[in-house]
Image (cartoon, rainbow, N blue to C red; front, side, top):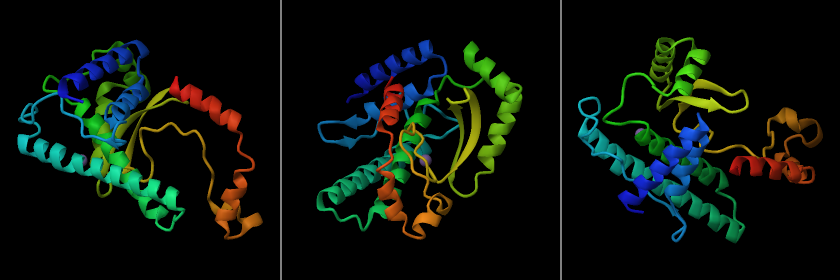
Amino acid sequence: MNRREYLKKSLAGAALLGTAGLSIPSTAKAIMTDTFDASTNRYTLPDLDYAYDALEPHIDAQTMELHHSRHHQGYVNGLNNALGKLAEARDTGDFSLVKHWSRESTFHGGGHFLHAMFWKIMSPNGGGEPSHAGLRDAINRDFGSFEKFKSHFIAASTAVEGSGWGIMSYEPNGGKLVIHQAERQSDLTMWSTTPLLMVDVWEHAYYLRYQNRRRAYVEAFFNVINWDEVARMYEEAVG
Ligand code: MN3
């Protein structure tokens, strides 16, 4: 996709966001669909909507160029590589490295998604406070005031242990904005996903019946999956 097409799609996504209020998932979906090239089955690095020096003096041009062209590209490559290795494992039936490639796909997938969104939520014309009434009201409601939100966000972002992110998210079940931290990209969540199917693998979920045989428990779990409910949630997530 060239820059013009990407911009057009981004603008369409922004229009959608306007009608849906705080519809962060639609932005996430646009990122993950716009950067996926179905013809090669690979994710691609999205163009920025502005020049590398456009965020000066707040973020310098060299940092932006290295961050986008080297670091983000590295996550895109890592994600494609991991997804390829997992496809290979499905073909050969050799899942001996599934833990490694699952970690890699989550780490790099989280990195790709968060960086693509990071570029989108910055602008040379940014700063100040939100003018969108719905977002302003939600921040006031959920954090007390814009100033309190800002203090909280800065404190949480500054205090991330090691590498990671400070994040404000929409928590769709409670319908609230939340601030949280991510260590590394993702430990171990991929932020663009809406959970549809999950199995509790804490020992408390299976130890009495299966002792340390977690795999037998997960295999047995497939006998009790309510696929009708999974399908209903899938329809909701797809919209
Ligand atoms: Mn980064």
